[in-house]
Length: 295
Image (cartoon, rainbow, N blue to C red):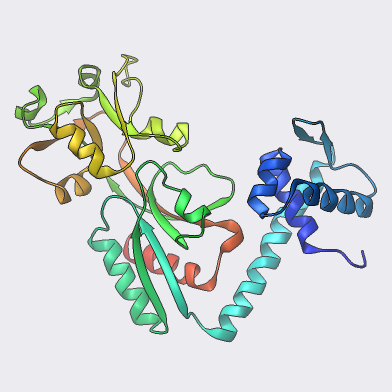
């Protein structure tokens, strides 16, 4: 095992998730030829093929036990290095936190608590687009982001989950729902739902703007928007409704729209996410503050 490179292991882990040499190369910020080179080097060390590959796709060979053993070992090794770095330097530098819609009082309290505990670490907050909840994290524009669930991204860590809240449907003040105290989820079949535009993952889009009621009735598709403010403008113009958790709805209250509680849809929840490969002592410390004050 002399000369084993950590990059070989990172390459194999990325390929095992992407099963595509081009996407793995993009994740690792290297060329496809370098991905192939690193994989061949690791396979020579193992003495067997780890992936069967064609010009268009790849799949794992029966040596899947290696992947099962490697992933926790790699994460433990990475965590040990980061813990040592954090102990040596303390939690300092800059922590950039992304959020969607509004940072409520509990989130701001967690940020304040983090600042009090780690005065050597500056924190900044950045609003991330409704239509791209994970993009800023992946691009390195923020270190971690508070986003609506669900989260099913293999390259991201889902940290503390918090803020379970009932949902409302936001409609124009002129909409037939506007005079009601509440509506049943089946009534959404009469209201086009405004949802996030691409590149949001399909499963996340369907959680924000479902295609059918719990009873199976189709829900008309409304406009697709990039930001929450674009969505609220479309609502005010009478182009459809929008599902929002109660605190976010209250924060954005205005005269030309109204918020009606919806019965029969899952509650909204938030989670803190960050890139698995970019985890730092700062992120872990902030995650603990969120877990203590928000969860």
